[in-house]
Length: 113
Length: 113
Image (cartoon, rainbow over all chains, first blue to last red):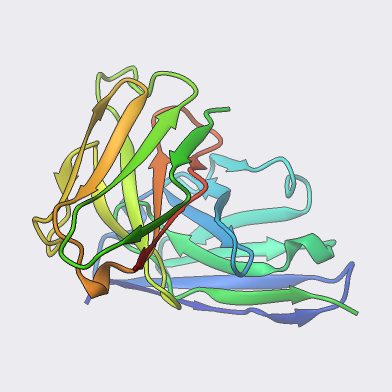
């Protein structure tokens, strides 16, 4: 079965850190560009970050650049998002996706004191 | 950045009747390779997004043929020929032609009258 299984969300205080993981199965993870997308509950989808299949080239939305780091381990079929210096406006459901029809189940990140 | 503007943002529809959603881009979505990377996603309540249509008009496997996509350059349309109860949700257009950032429309909420 083609799927992306996410883990790592939760409640964190402002200024804290979290790492999200996304494990792929059922497709050739290593050849796909991968992305993180977030969604404030009740609001729209916002692209957050991208990583090339080579695991070198990356891109970020302006609001997270310098605080978030995307990475991948093609040997483990796993995508990561390291989130540092978290702020209240980072509170959202985070999805991993390859934009070719495969999405993770989403994981909630809540930044609050 | 490419801005995608969807209309309407809310679409009440009678079961069995057609529905149409517009997505207009702030610039041409023709990629340098000649393709147009305009995708439509459906997000049912409480679920992850699901890709319905890619490259303007190509339907994903398993998507009912009542869904169709059309358009060119900057104007695109998603049509549902006869709305069914399972079509309730939010529909997003997304562009992958000019990045970063990859961008979404604001979303159109389809509900049954």
